[in-house]
Image (cartoon, rainbow, N blue to C red; front, side, top):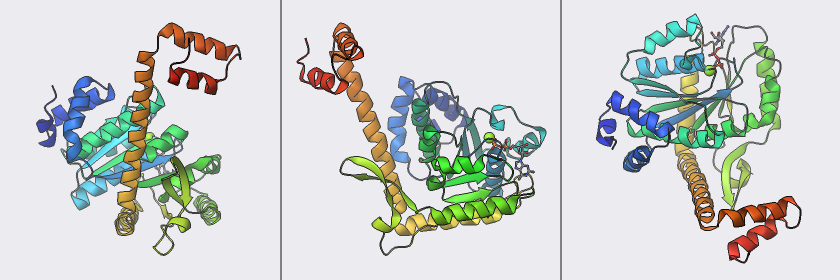
Length: 334
Ligand SMILES: Nc1nc2c(ncn2[C@@H]2O[C@H](COP(=O)(O)OP(=O)(O)O)[C@@H](O)[C@H]2O)c(=O)[nH]1
Ligand SMILES: [Mg+2]
């Protein structure tokens, strides 16, 4: 039995133990999450995503430092990046900066084990974030590598998403095309000390002008879709993604970035988007869990041999998957 009261009281050892259980999806962690849930929904979740090497982990370090030292906020970091310095592969510079945070009780850094399916990873990341939220962390920063749909799903957890770019990474514009631009609330051009920063910024600006501003997922007649902002908010203000330069190795641009993040929070609150995102996120999670549970229940009630023989018929093209589902659901298959 997990002592969830210890979590609420800020006991780090209890927190650390629970995070491991949550990652393993243990029965104890499920019980603890039930108890902790009413205490969640307070933290500001900031997603940081982008290609490997753009400086996400360095940026996260700087943000954590800033929030700690200048705003006295409690900060948790969840790194979902196999190559993250947080997992130990740090270059010296990163380690030095990490030392500023080490031993500070107001900071907790957790690297997600990336074993298992990515769908499972999204769910366990959501649960880890929830534990930090319940434990009273004001800000939870989630670092992901902006590569595939699953990373985008993880990024969607956040209230504010930073997409990090850096000059001279050849295929970074490709990464933007792959759909990452539409989840960006703030575009960070990191490594602003490097040549080519103007070009990267210019490319981002023209892409922003081309792109229709897109609202997060909406439910429409039972299916999820992205709805352009102008269709849903005819008269209210629209958030145009900001572009912000940073140098994460020395902290330049971090105060300005923090200010922009603050502006985004103000926008979310005033527009009602904060509540809407929260609701949509929970609905997506609920639907996913229902789907999982229904499939599991169904499989328990269908004898393995019957399921296998249906599958075999489909493989042999004697029956379509759609037809098979109808027969199986009606219990008409013999
Ligand atoms: N020149 C320069 N190097 C940076 C900057 N930010 C990060 N780096 C370096 O870029 C490398 C990758 O950084 P890291 O934070 O691990 O990137 P990640 O893979 O996106 O998490 C490290 O060697 C950092 O020290 C920056 O603003 N300027
Ligand atoms: Mg990293």
